[in-house]
Length: 462
Ligand code: BES
Ligand code: ZN
Ligand code: ZN
Image 1 (cartoon, protein in one colour):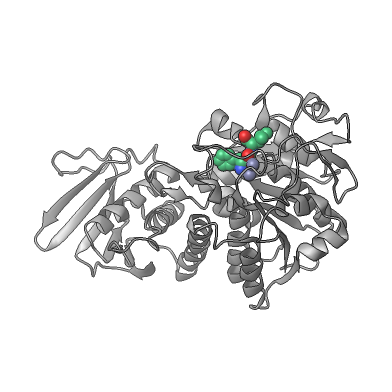
Image 2 (image 1 turned 120 degrees about the vertical axis):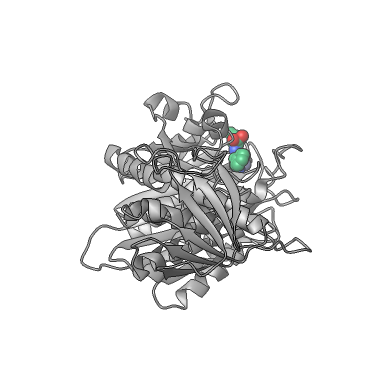
């Protein structure tokens, strides 16, 4: 979608954000948050979008309301829309949220539709005091979200581990980041046996991809972002049943969020240091697939007894974290992963699970999420959870001794923690928030949501 700044309206279709405060004489419209009504005046179409009382109106409401506005305009086959922001023009952050809502809400994945729906292609911002550069920054961020959504929505047969490597290498050709790819042979040779095990049942072999962005060589701070990139999670020998397997192309959403974030950093070039790591494997089942009951030695040296081949995300993240710690020495690590179904039981698809060994990092991520509208809620990591992962045959087991399903998201996080050493670390379980099986909710589309990109950028660029 193209964005223009303008003082007056040029297009006949207007999306108008409307609060309850301003006396409004629109019949049968009370400007409640989320309420939309359409009026025709002369040759103009006015799509009024309610934002409630200005006093209590949040960025969340503004984002969702502008998203609805652009969606209605798309349904009405309008290609060009003026976004009228006079009511919030005194608040630059609110107008940014309106632009975000419009860009994010205007997204649709139409690649596999024979008949392409008409969508809004150009918007004109009227009544905002945003500078061209802040508009451009928001465009870059929202394009990175769309890219992450596209990666999740695309067929699992297209988004293979090697496709992640090729997309990262394409980013490196900008000269802004450097990229290292470990292929299946190097993974095996170097002893990243957990990534190797998870990927060995597939004809599309695993990759570990490391992207380095050095925006401030004097600063010692270096944040590592690690994304779970299981390009399809069949469950392996512990095969997922019908009803659970259909959406498993979304199991690389953490990797998509990391790659999207790196793509935005390449364009924004901020003065910070970030390492993006993608641990990519296809958890498949063929004659060569890894076995439940077998023990594998991780890159860290700890041995792992595989109790379920479906608890594969923690395995590939463990090797990725150790590799990153040993070879890149980050000052903090944030991993994003569609790790457990349990987080959907706990928080639904509205909030992601946050786990951390560092209160300050956890708080900053929580705040970044409140700001971006990608909510996080922290869960505990008491010693008893780690104790439940102690192995009998090996050092660790990949699922706990607890009853099936008990505290499964915490257990997943506690497993990763075993490989983090003393580095400040946060794990974000996005199994619920990364993929929306229902209808669009404001700026959150059906299917891949791109969850995490704006959260990470908000955190990194604060
Ligand atoms: N990829 C799944 C988690 C998942 C579930 C993601 C639903 C998105 C939607 C993960 O690899 C998995 O299978 N986890 C198991 C772990 C269990 C075997 C301990 C789970 O959560 O059931
Ligand atoms: Zn799994
Ligand atoms: Zn998985």
